[in-house]
Length: 282
Ligand code: SAM
Image 1 (tube, helix red, strand yellow):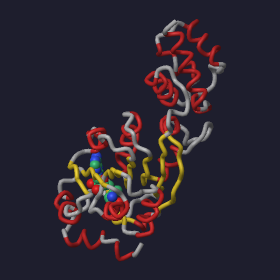
Image 2 (image 1 turned 30 degrees about the vertical axis):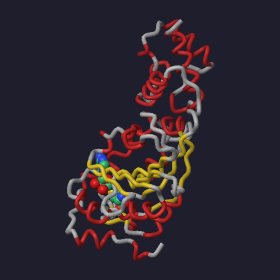
Image 3 (image 1 turned 180 degrees about the horizontal axis):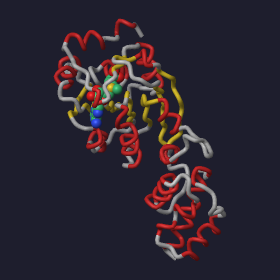
Image 4 (image 1 turned 180 degrees about the vertical axis):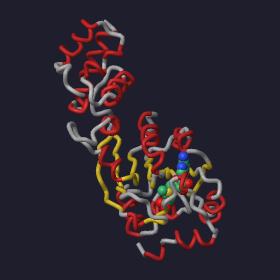
């Protein structure tokens, strides 16, 4: 990619754009990162790409060269006229002025077969956006997202690591994960204080483990990590089971009640949640 394609600084100047810290605005100014995101996402001509937070449209313009269509969702009112002016003539581009957390993505996806999400996510809402995109069951093939390095490490973490938590379970339940590249602060204006990672999450055909009740499963996971220092026994006491029934659930799932949540694999969480389910519904 020709570095001259990267018009971020020029556009910021042209429109006298003022960055908003509270909206997580760190715009990319490095051509190699844009290239790696588009390649990492494997954007091709059949794809509807949904981009969250297009900024001044630098990444959007590169995606438009490869995709069938791009729908961008931007919250900042000041960016809307800039995006319309710069990209509005492209018939493949459409823009939704809305908080991504309030969007029903099914309305955008419609009956498109190949849908990919690509975003340099605003860091202040990274986790709620990922949770929404996965939990609401949209038929994305993949999410290729730039996130804070620490969040990527949490996503990719394994039992007994200090980064392992509810976010690791959530993402690994629904997706395969692959780190595309690391991105230093110098690739953005203004420069963030932290390193970033581009990570690709490929949605699995079906979740990695079978659970009888998804809500109960994620409640068990959440309770276990909310009380990190406590045993699983203490973390699961709130499920309205008698002492005997809860003991039976641990026995049936072959999990020692004195263990802590951070030691359980995804499969073990599923086994425990399913055994609790069986006791609730016996
Ligand atoms: N894509 C651009 C780039 O890579 O240079 C900008 C990325 S910047 C990290 C995040 C973008 O998300 C900004 O344009 C910001 O205004 C937008 N944004 C922040 N919160 C949002 C939300 N809740 N919904 C949609 N867009 C949001």
